[in-house]
Image (cartoon, rainbow, N blue to C red):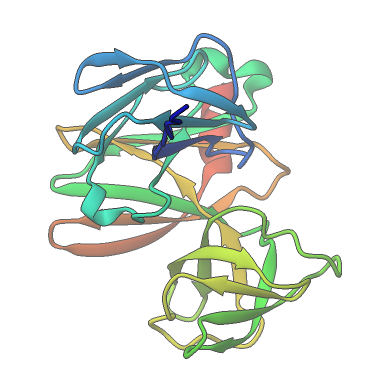
Length: 247
């Protein structure tokens, strides 16, 4: 008898995440479309979905999840890891899901806007102890003496400049060290706060949308606006928006 070998290739891992909490999203009835055609990725639990033998053509991925704003992202395989191409879909809760008024909305319009992100200044997850640029290894200060940097994208705060630098965690090495994707571009003060990154949404006309959770009284966030002309940062008290919405 002659045998045959069936080879399957993982073409894309899709990770769904509520950007306001950092928690995975695994609701039923999720709709995926690629270049306008409905597709059915295989669920793998914890908000993970995979495409097997789908092909690695570039295109537009659209995702619809009940209770969240529609999500879309351009897939460019030249920009993804060849061995494990990943699409992180950061979902923004929709207006209908504002149960108990625990969500606060920032919206507006800015010409030439390309992306918008925020960090919660009052809720840092850890602080920077030291950084080894050759190994891209970051030693962090953990207030609870345990590693809780379980997410992927973070902002390292430069309080003196009123900015933050985004970095991506590749792996946790031990309870005090993480390896990040690329060297830091700036120098930071000891114990500079590290906060989880909250992703907003930018529309074709330059309008934008950011939602955060009402967690405590201090809702000061640093918001980054990336435009065609450069990058700007603003410290915004979302608590003021919450008070207006309650009036």
